[in-house]
Length: 355
Image (cartoon, rainbow, N blue to C red; front, side, top):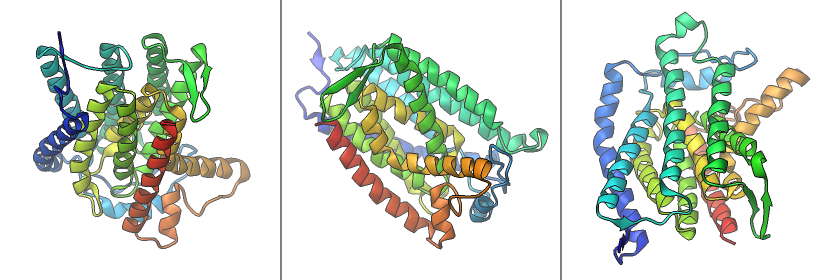
């Protein structure tokens, strides 16, 4: 008979130990990784950002170009380490014959998590590579928005298909009401929309030192708490490793940052954050827990549409953190207050999900 993963130990003790393990490994790896990025000149350049409608985002350039020279690509280190550590841990548990609880079929759940984690990371890495090495050849900064957006939808629809077809997820749960809406195959485009939304919202939020990674770390604690209530060991292990690695990264990402997450991390983290929420079956709670990402992404969308159709700006600058900067708020003040807001949203979302 297989033993439990906990061997009689408190599961919280096991997960905290895994988190600490990931933190230590990432802490040991991150300084050599930063030095490696400097060596290959994978660093932020002075840029003139072009919005999807072709407008130069002058405000962003003025407020952010002082960060030129900072290594970019911290997300790649986290993706690599979390993937390797999860593989090592999971294979060890299998060899020991230890039983693993899961809300879904284990191998399929792992496939979906890491397909999202890695595929969106590769898309972001491709974009980063063009930003830093092909800017002059392309005549604009990075991958074309329409192409990147189309690829995101292709990946997201495929992931939605896997969630629906392979895992049988097709319900929309309304917290505290006991209502489950069965969407059938319509779940696929709904899931894809959620994934693409958080992918781009996270990418837009990643504009200040420690902002996106700090909010993500806090939000993942909320999802971690939810995963423990549904007894999904796979998600709990993955989130524990992800948080531990993020904490080590955040030490070097807070103001003034020594390393930036880059598109390789932004696209991967946003998409995977959404998929974790979908695997937990709590998409509405996900929108609350990740509410700050939606505020940032929504403010940019409103600004874009208002400039295109109304020929004027709704906000002084977008995303919203740029408006706060234009109002004179220092960068650390914006970030720390965003963290506080994320804590309360995380607590509220986790509480709502467990009603």
